[in-house]
Length: 573
Image 1 (cartoon, rainbow, N blue to C red):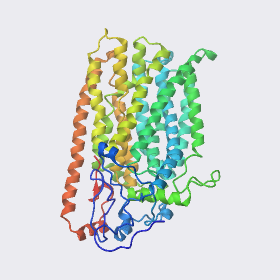
Image 2: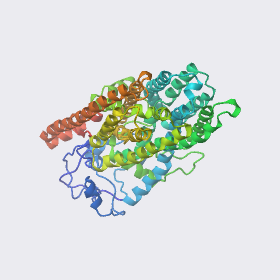
Image 3: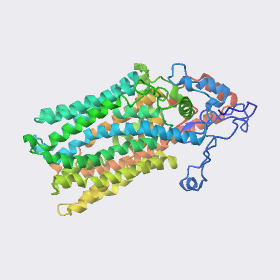
Image 4: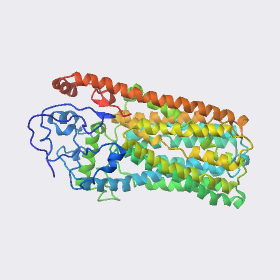
């Protein structure tokens, strides 16, 4: 194992010196020579610029991958040392060193073991969430004597119950562990999902919509919290991108499933959409049951009676734990089975520094939400049959699936959340203007092309989820902010579920006019968020740079500030 060089005198980086000025801790000078700080220089100093990044020579896989952090300074080590209650404390070692070869191999192993199964669970969630759209292509509304407004109300109830359940679900998950709560959630909602086989009319439709939303609420922030146990803050956005790719795969695979399953219409005197709900609900139930055995509590808790050797050996566990804590020392603040008090919840919710991201959560999807929700109904209104309608949803899904990892990767390469998230609004605006100009004489294929481009938008939600997580800077706030952000996203979905109305169809001129206005408003909000965070960072820099070395050290040792309140923390933007 590599060790630290003997301390001498001079300079040392403080709280995560590797963090940039766009998010992380600011540097502080202490008392160890920079040249003597490590036996080798582990910091990967590659520039963030895309062109310069491509021009960099290949990394030496046998060089040290360990990044400088607060744990390299004896003074700040004790400030940030993980408490004994933290489930991974026994693997914490400030002197641990590892190579890039080891780190890359372990991250790939985590991708295979953790990310792939998490994505499969999300795939199952979206199969059950999106199959209502395929059911629409099989005369679902007419079979149950439902109107478009009834359908809107069902979507509103699902979103509202999803929103209501977000925070309670996250709190339960924090208390019992995501590895226990997520599989339980999946099995519960799958029972309701397959129960839609027996729908009889408006009341049963609305009840099942509400129950589905309520039981699915909290699933996404639960999984995001679980993934944060394994990934650094720069790795998480890319992993969330691939996590959300399963959303698109669910739409594509679901379209093919629906094309076949809906052919069962008439079998046993039942409609095809009933078999769709039944079979896909059973699929989710099976995934939920297997998930009990596929989700260990954490990286150092993978051993079980059915997995006696665990997933990682002691060396791998040491690397996982120390790379995560070096990246974000606050991840040891709470145990993964530790619940939250009412005071902790309240303090997290009133953290005004995250409010701009919550506002963006409400509004950012509104411009593209209604066209996406009504895609299958719009295609049927254009004269396409059931099979054609389901297959014509695939091009926009493929486009979205390609753009999603691209924008998430770009956000980390250029180190900017603002630029890559405002792209959605800039993408939607000209297309919505074109859609507004269409009339009854517009070719159905032109309409299809424009709507497909709108619904194939660059999905920036994973970037904003990771943005909120990064700017939380504590397990407590991160737990609540994940739920709060997603609650605002669901609130936005409730808003856009009411923009397209029955008296405005089939072209929805009034609705598209509203979407154009909201898109312009969103562009202004994104610009405002950028200046909000840069202004806070500049003010903190001014205070920090005026302090002497002694004053900075005293602040680190005595401050009562927590999370993103700390003056040595810089917000990402």
